Length: 498
Ligand code: GLN
Image 1: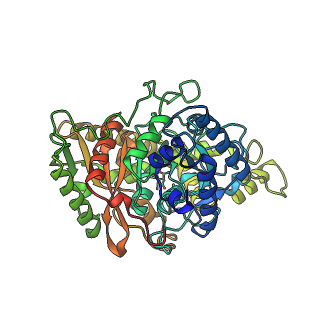
Image 2 (image 1 turned 90 degrees about the horizontal axis):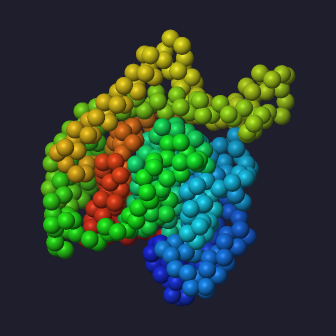
Image 3 (image 1 turned 90 degrees about the vertical axis):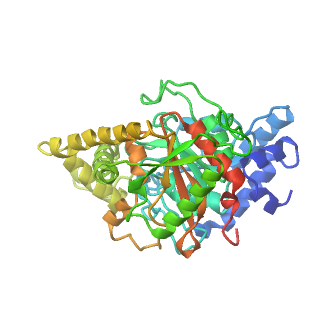
């Protein structure tokens, strides 16, 4: 098959072509590696290991030759560089971990490998996943293929670029406060953050442990369902917050009408709640227009739209920016130049070594969060900030449970604007934080959420529709998104030249 045919394929098409011997895993991996290297100006990939990729592809081809079948068998994928991987450097986008080689694979990476997926390389991200534009990476910006002067979102920016620019059919990402949903929205790809605890955090470089979740990003809800079915599942022995809930086949509801609905109106009976706080003056009019017209499509599919309220939406920003830095300051204390990470070349004594190593190894945003986190946890401030934030977090989760008495799913924009220009907000941390307003509530509540391409806004940049479900409703989210994608073609659009 030609290279251009191969890179246009999503996960399902590639797996089928490999199974039918129309192509091989080796041929697909070679084509995608060449394409990824040719587009290195986009800053999507941080590392390749061509020999290892081709060794994995050959092994997958041998499994195909032996008669094995599988939805990911032989399919080349790439991983956000926050997952540790054997054979590739694992940096978390930080100078602190430049060149670090992990002796083991993250659970999510290992599960995908067991299913026969092949690793193309590691993807750029904001340093320790702190950011929403990929501009905090120590290894340079990633560029949005819809307009290379604009950010791709973050922190899973490289992941989003790889899918949008057809440098990989699907990728892994992580979402602590929106890092799958917001870059998916900014680049016109589909991404899902599952219920907190659904995917193992083992081998995921920790940012804020009570929020971090892994999830897939791909061109369609169907491909995300295939990926998530492999990635999710209990890992109790290695991740104490992994949920003891059996693995599920998230593809089982795809294409099936809801109970009592028909093929013509597959979403009949589905009540979609629209929080009034997501459609107010904090959201750009072009984004609201695209989201409203996508919701019109859901109505045609049979869904009913209901006005709801998530009254503490605004509080999610101060709450998250207390809890996440608090956890980060604790998690990042392990990077001291002794056990892990960069060590300064010259220093006077032990304290000086810590200071210099951490000052050199961590970038400005990470240092800022360590300072905020240390402050809010300190004696005398803990009750006023950290404890208060935890109390409000509980109330935010309760607001969702109240809302789910009125509706089955919640919908709104994934982000208040389309992707901004590179550099536009880089001197203003608070402007970056405010842009997280629509993704933080579900993160704080631990709920599953996804972003689905829903059209275009200002500057012809993509807009994502966010869908939020109750705990463990990933299957319903993916079913709903799939029905939308059967009726529309936003998710199939590629940036021009890609
Ligand atoms: N943008 C948010 C932050 O900067 C979320 C990041 C994430 O989800 N990893 O913390």
